[in-house]
Image (cartoon, rainbow, N blue to C red; front, side):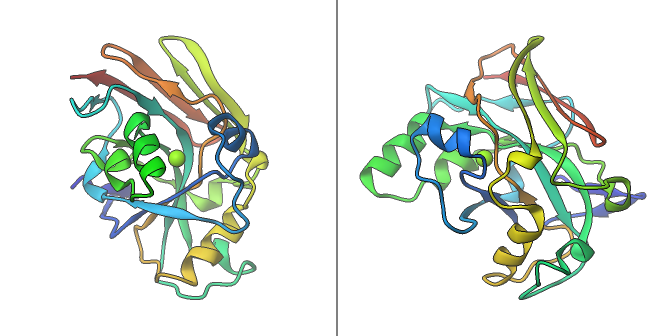
Length: 218
Ligand code: MG
């Protein structure tokens, strides 16, 4: 498993928690219902790759999508965290691509089956491994977020458009599972998701956090 880095320290997440539909316009484009509380799935931490590495397209899928997301990295163990205290539990922030086999996800949703497979392939979680300390980010709920592919803008929004704030998300998740140091929360993707193909160059950017690049191969 790939480790995150914070001030020279290696940090290994015990889990990668990913929100579903946390931007209204993304729910509309996928025709998915808007959730009334933060809903999420787990991605295996083994799916993590670092900056400038390649997403490997699996043979099982014919439609792999990009989803650019703000990622929150937890700094200390917490259960039943209140919204007011939530940011005290944040180590820092980074950028994550929640790569998704959309055709498999659609098929399993239709069949009423779990869709972990659609999200869980190796290399399906490119992350900027260098975490930006929380002190450097004035307000995580107001950051421009963008993804370009081969120089063309595909997703462009601001985290103020999230349905659930970072504080609400941390609090809600911690009521179900204990958050531990290094755990990653991917806060959902804005609208504009679409397919990636062999040879594409993805550049994800979040204001005040930096840039994450990824290639695509078979
Ligand atoms: Mg996502």
